[in-house]
Image 1 (cartoon, rainbow, N blue to C red):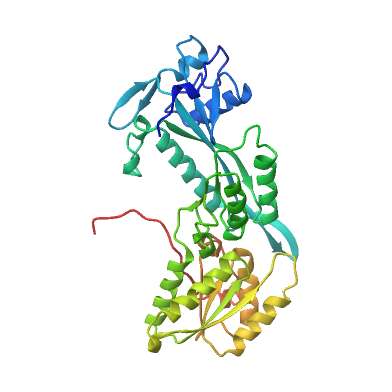
Image 2 (image 1 turned 90 degrees about the vertical axis):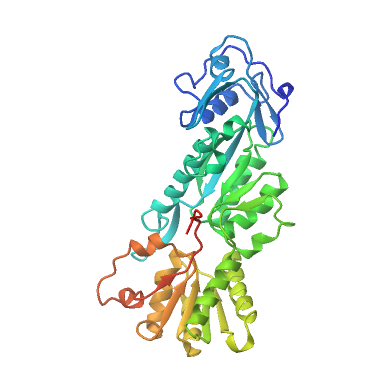
Length: 391
């Protein structure tokens, strides 16, 4: 994008928090944005254009000017200096770092995925990506090599908000930061959420305020509707492709009947629908009969609905099952699957990526226990990003 220097404003002498940083320093543009904000919006340091803050350096001698008027950028191939106007996009991160579970019979807030490593690793990747983009570092994504010399846009991160895997909390936070803050310091975009059930309402709200929303993990087919979710994007394929992979894999094993237990939300219901569609699209003599059973459950609530649905699954006589659920559902589901005798030798349980691999990898059930028996041979089918190779 090309920016008109007239969109910026002259900087005046002020103490700048970037005095010990350079543009290649991690967090530099976060400090610039915070410095501008400390002067109030709008100010003599910047002007809001759309959803970005446009910063214009000046020739006035000042700590702020010295940091921004001549910015030195280093990359693997070049070092340049420029006095161009640039824009800062500040992203708000709304994700689930924790979730409510039933621990020793009581409801408790615990790290998501068991050890909490996965959500923090995802955010670390985001921060690294922003740093690479701001400095034209193409060591991971070659297409952004020297992009800081071609594109006058920089990224910064706003607050990180833990939704606690709760849709209501996420929507309330969006309201506090964006709706009630519309005339002050709204973000330039939203990074998140993890779960489709949270991303769907957020995508409606962010679209109403014309804020881009980028999700790393929301896979619901519902979010493929570009007319309804105009400002939503994601870094992972929708469940339509994963569902086809599930059906193709099971058909290759000569499976003819499949029971699907799915959480009754945008993720579970559309995943189940995609499995059904993928099966129907196969040749008539190669289709899989799919029987779906929806459920709703959260920590601390009655397990009766899961008990009933698992009982009905067992009544089908099927031996292959696919679960579209989350970490907090796994142990309850498998407890009742064991109760009704549909786990262990002769039975196969596969799960979608709503069940995190970090959750299962971190488990060590006592030998001979209900969950140890039920967990033998389970698997997860998930879509993951990768880099093309020459193979």
